[in-house]
Image (cartoon, rainbow, N blue to C red; front, side):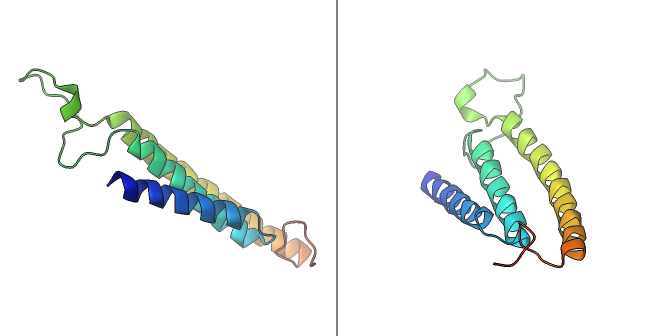
Length: 112
């Protein structure tokens, strides 16, 4: 399981950085989205990858910390998803306005 998550984080990061280095604005936005997904997976994996483990402690039994997942990375990832959605929407609006003003979708505003 850890190998699959690590490979997914690596592939998303590599694809995101490659797309960010392209000269078109739409590819830049997709690259930023992929990079944010990679960061979200990384933060989520920091809370321990466990299946069917409760995230909240109950007071009835003695506390075994290894039996629980950490809820803080899950809350951070949920917040990051909302923020990245709003940022992507803002970037798309800026892309549309920039394309309308310059007539080009290149980052520097000119072909070539």
